[in-house]
Image (cartoon, rainbow, N blue to C red):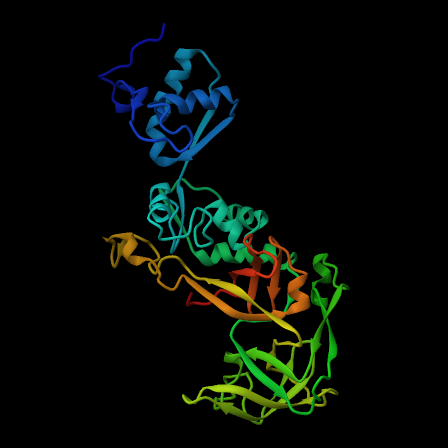
Length: 386
């Protein structure tokens, strides 16, 4: 039979471990049908053995349980896997603790286990991360015996960006639209502009750069509000200003001649001329745009979930309630974003795109006919302020 454990052993986990516990609470899978549950110490090693696990990897806080793990398997006379302990990987400005994740979900600080701000597999997937990006991050980080390893969120983004670059066809969309009237284009006149799915320079990465699509260019186009200023230091600002000439991506040069404002002085309509021959060479100042028949979509812009790099700490290691450090601006929902209707109609849930000059985006699973929802996975580069 199985020997008793040793109450005098130096390792408390070898004294007399509990095998079962009784809990009178509804279980998420079996409801109230059962109230007796085996403990971690009793089941972990047995399940690993029965499932022929060759290496059982866990974090360092379980290192002192290795002895009881092997003891029980020895007493049962069954296969003993190798047990390896490593440091816990954390990512700054977020949490990976199951207890904290559960609290965020159950108390509705986030929308669910697949909220794109969470670092759960479902959350990362809905944000638009790919398996290749996550695996690259894990490979780059490696493993450590340090108790806690903190990785910058930007490192995860960088790995995700590398993986997405070759699987995200380029498109144009405008998140915060400003109307521009091309005064020398006739009403009803439409030109089709050819765009490439991927830039020519990506051929060396094994990407097919020959595939193209077309978007309409008419008298009215839309650009980002941030790409126009009534007055600006043109040495630092490369957007459109009165009198300046800029280039529409994949298109033509436009020159601002005038603009209208609302009662608050905010620009509402910009008037430009267009040069279909592109006589002036533009080095800086390329604008993405949308024109012709357009449709609106919901664009979810995500930022870091917590304002603190180390949630739960403040200053020099002072402990605080991590919930007080939630970032109130971690989700910015834009319902007035616009995109060419022909481009939108070709999009399907689960697809990746790069919106030029804006970032990498993912078509959300909630997308349906007439309701396009797109999540920003990340910007094109990691800035200091997120």
